[in-house]
Image (cartoon, rainbow, N blue to C red; front, side, top):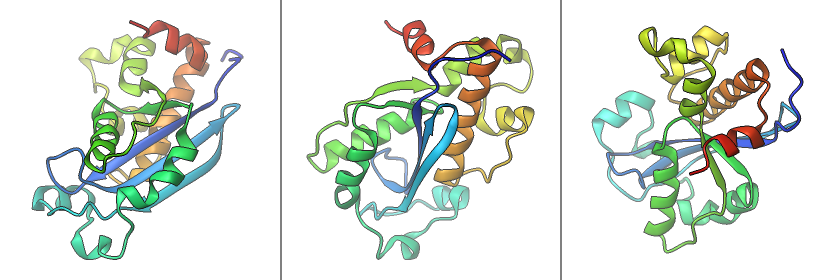
Length: 184
C-alpha cells in the first residue's frame, strides 16, 4: 500500500422517512483526519413529514422514534459547523440531494462543501467489479472486510469512509487527487 498525502475528509449518510430526499429522519457523519476516524456525529431527525412503510422496513426508524428528535433546522448550525468547507463523501448522489433538499425545505443555505461520491471512486479504483458484485455499499464493505450495520446512517457513513480510505491506499491517490479526477 502506498503513502497518501491527504486523507482528510468527512463522510455522510442519511436515512429518509419517505420517497422525498428532504425527509431526513437520521443523519450520520464521520470526520477522517490523516486516514483515521477523528470524530463522529449521529442524530435522529424529526422530518416533520409522514413515514412510508417501505422506508421503515429498510432502516427501522418510525414516527415514534423521532417524535422528540430535533428537526433538520434545529441541528443545522451544528451540522454546518461540522461540514463547512470540508470535502464530503457520500455513497451515491442521494445524500447530497437529501442534504440540499432539506436545506431548501427549511430556507437554509446549502452547506459549502466539495462532494465526492464513494461509488465513483470505487469504480475507478476497482474497475474489475463491474461484472461481479458491483458497487453497492454492502458488497464493497464485505469484500473490503468492513463490518457494519447497513441502513444505520452512522454505520453507512463509516463504511463509505472506509471504502474511500481503502481506495486511497490501494491506488496511492489522495483526496485532492480524487477531487481533481472528478472535476468537470
